Length: 197
Ligand SMILES: [Zn+2]
Image (cartoon, rainbow, N blue to C red; front, side, top):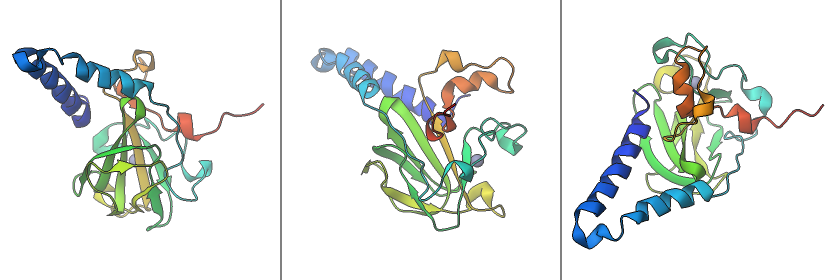
């Protein structure tokens, strides 16, 4: 399947529409979730590197979708290396959807940003935010660490962006799990300034 976040997002969206259509009192509001959706897509989007003092050489631009990548099969984000304890900052403004303390990501934070993109920050040493907190771009949400399956590896931030709305043009017939690329955006696209020639 796709990501848990994508699944939960569609479940919440479809059940809220179904709820509003079903009950007479809410029926006239069925367009509200659709309006909220539309507004989300219209919000302006900009990004910064989510680790303090990191630069373009802090990650390998070929690490996105690297294969093979252990139990994940392909690497669906980029790894930004930094000293343990370096502040992790929000790449975009948004709202914290959840924080987690276990699993492959270890201590991790999921933030919903503009355009219905979900930003995932994993392997944190410490989480310094909480669910439903509105977040400004650049706000500290935790620190770089080696939790989860990064244990024993150099500390780094695993940063991934998922979208519940597939970007059909990103489908890749060559790559392993290439169809999933519709649901994962490559952070390098925004974080690496356009090369001047
Ligand atoms: Zn990673």
